[in-house]
Image 1 (cartoon, rainbow over the protein chains, first blue to last red):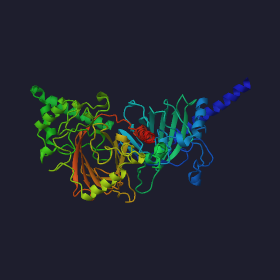
Image 2: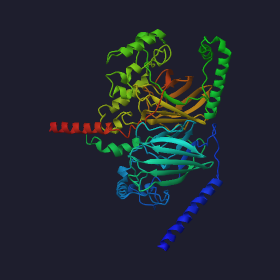
Image 3: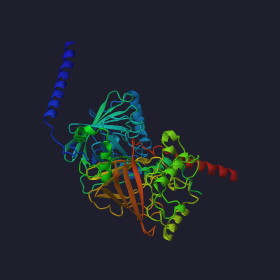
Image 4: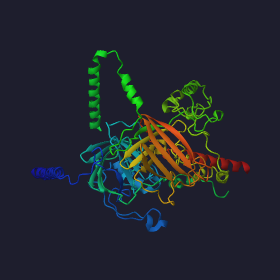
Length: 271
Length: 344
């Protein structure tokens, strides 16, 4: 009994000290201060992109064979470390089974394959750039993928008029960090090509923190009691697209998804 | 923003206080007349964004009763009198269901065209109004789209002929709007359509103006930093837009359209110039000029007043909810099967 107590108390105390130290370090050393906009807010304007394999699989994964053998190595799955804090997504047992099923059938089930709006946080780490356009009242985020967009309300928080693919975003500043609270997302989006999913109870809190002139730290806390046993967090850097005249181009992927969606309904070529 | 608001409120309070003190003996006079005179005398100047540009931000509606082209019987009459506008609007409000009214573009508010609940979607015709005295959105003595050049007619006829008899073969033969690739109203230039989905939201950041059209969540992020257009070989459904400021007006120049992005029969060489000018706190004048020597003998211009409105702008997930294409194609396949059975 005694040993068990000390076993649990000592690591507990150690953890508390670590947390305390971390808090002191982060409070004492605001390592980078972002430049300001005309109205004195941290300036996050720019075109940003994740540089990782999170869209393939949020969790750590080795390289593997792609789903279309005829494409050879071109569409093989690249390897990557987990962007999930602690490595694993804490699925409830039934949800873990569904995730496996999703993964086994992802080429036909993944909303990305159908060019559907990606939802949050997936929009952020899809392998396409997105642009932040910042005004005092609203922050618009325009995503190259599927022309997805959302407008973050920076005023008094408002309620969603309806559930939607991209959800309802209320933002606020915490020091240099833009915190966005995202609610009212439909249950139809996924988190990655590995079948990670959620329900309509999804609540996402995002944090965009400038870490240098050309990088941001992106964090998203994901809460969904119908699917996960506890809230969990992803974290990754975002990189500024610094090339001259960088621009979001049009990626209306609908026409690339139509064969998958409607191909079986083509008129038979015999006549 | 908050600080500026406070400062202006304080200034206003001071003015009111001084006015009250000095005018105390003549309490019977109307103080508002002086205020009215000063605002009416000056041209309206737009507020500025934090980086000093004219502010176009907000949620706008391009809903209007003014038809795109001028009714034939009006000839070269470019403007109605105030009285005529009042009378026309009254006719719209009191019109019988299904009644066509010349000089009024009723769109979806025409009960024959309504597909939804009037209350729910705001198609209540009694709420529609004229947004200017213009007899048509197209400006100038003609007030109509210039006649299409013979070569353009042939081009468009050839395309239509190629599709004829194959309309239901596959998704590729269906109209772009049905495929949620490019809807009528989101396509640029932006023209008011069927009195639904007329909302536009503008958000400005340093060096950029973004325009979000509710229809199909179409978003244009327009740089205003003087950069050139994309190379000619990069063709986009919505073209490539670059902007610059001329006084209080945002001027946006668009080229690089695809050969399928036809605006009223235009070619891929369409050159579009749009001008956005705030005329009052609640009014934006959206003017556009289209030029396409392969389609029309001369450029032509239209002017659409936008009215500031309340949001929210809803998410218009067209493709995600598209059951139209699969239903139409499935119907066509079933019809073919049945025809084949009968033929045997």
